[in-house]
Image (cartoon, rainbow, N blue to C red; front, side, top):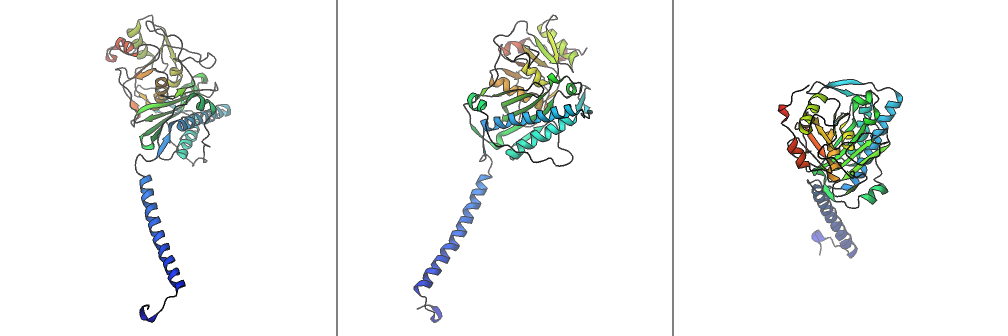
Length: 347
């Protein structure tokens, strides 16, 4: 007998039971969905495949290079100084820098929103058009980077240089110009991409994962050919001469990316200059050197401060220890030959 004299038919009991089950289902499914959503947002639960990130980095560098070329071909560089370095050298900015930055930065952030990205430039003005990537990994990367791994997104820091060698870009010394992307995991550089838009050439490497370039067959460790910045020639030249002799073969060049490529086995039509050691004795930003650092590491080379310390790419933008980069020689022996920088007078 139902309460208040109401009798429930078998059909009514069935309907009541189904309603109860439905209420319980929605309650628990909502509860579980909420718990899963919270879990997905926990640090370290968002995983990223490094080979996929390598393919994206190559795509970003190439698309940035297209913007750099388009601005040069249009002739409206609008070059201006955005300030001076600690050494008093003008830091140039052009429309090519800005448009390349917008393309590269937004492509990476739109693909992996949770990844931290540092760029030499900043987005200003109107919101750029939405850019996307189809996640297609080129055959070259599939063939040469057969090994890969997944890492948590919160361990990744991406460094991009939308236009390296801007000064040379304004002077139309276009063989120096590169666009670069670097991926660091827990502060260590693991993916490096250096793209030369005016040579239609891209070098990439992934530590423990392969590369599309290689080291040369031989290097001169005793009397190395040294490549330095054409913007800081005085102190760098004196430093190199004290380390390797006054008759040292020293080449001045623009762009950190270009100078790293000079250490590798790259055809002359793509890379006119070749060297055995890359030296830089003043402060330098990490977006200038991270890609080259990773590329050398992928091939068995090294890039350290002048004191031999590894460079951390976790967050801070400035490397204040100078750099020495090498491959195919004893990096330790090179470091032992370097003088105390404070003993060198600027010329």
